[in-house]
Length: 311
Image 1 (cartoon, helix red, strand yellow):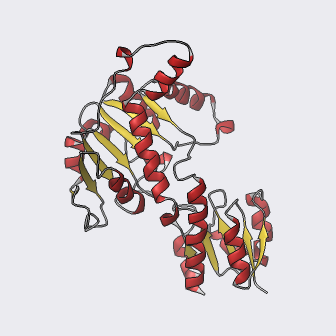
Image 2: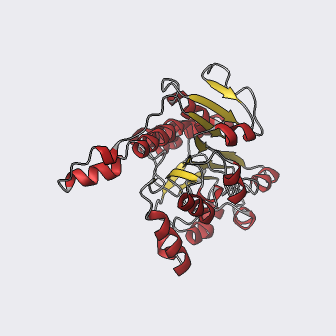
Image 3: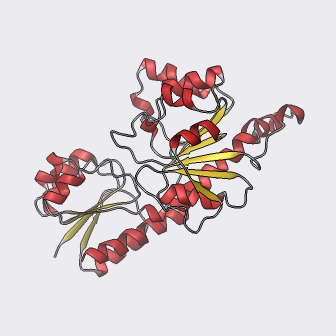
């Protein structure tokens, strides 16, 4: 009997479905990368989230491996070319959490423009400052979505009734706005010059690392709002901090960060992130966009169907 190693928490239906397909499942959500590397020669299937890096060294040890299933969308942790050369199928499940990411992006934006974090904190301290917490509306604003795949287009759908001008840009895809008359396909320059709000929905590649840097910020409309629910390294954190400090960036909604392992922060990183956390016009969450009870099930369902497809 072939076996599958599940290295992260997932909805029980995934393991049940794999067993119904004839696989023996080993569920070890707390397994370390080193332990995974040691045992992977015994498995023909692997389910991962984000902690396991499937690189050349890993694949050379995984002699029986037939497929790698990613609970989510980020594929920077898998060497796609090398898996293909070894005949290993690589499956991801962005359809499973795209709605959750889109809802999070909209929620963070509404939180920012209505000063909800500060207002909530003040009310709990018996402070009643209505004028100081006067917000601004999304209606009439222009938002630019960079990266119009699963999450970018889903975010656009959330904006359909917001009476905004919605611009989209994707370097590699066209026709993504078909069926979405509220969304306009355009170029990066137009977004930078005209968007009041810019939301990133990019994979992490060598091309998108530090996509938002000093030069990018300088080309944007002064005071624009930045949303990043994609990958932390898609922005240059130091450049964004300087943009917030001098007003070139009017606010930010950040769910992802360049270094998300807080226990590993150097003194310089602690100082940098401490400065970022000090801005009141920044909404921060710990990489939870896409992390809902519903998406947990949908990710499992999506991945299971794709595994059935390759079998």
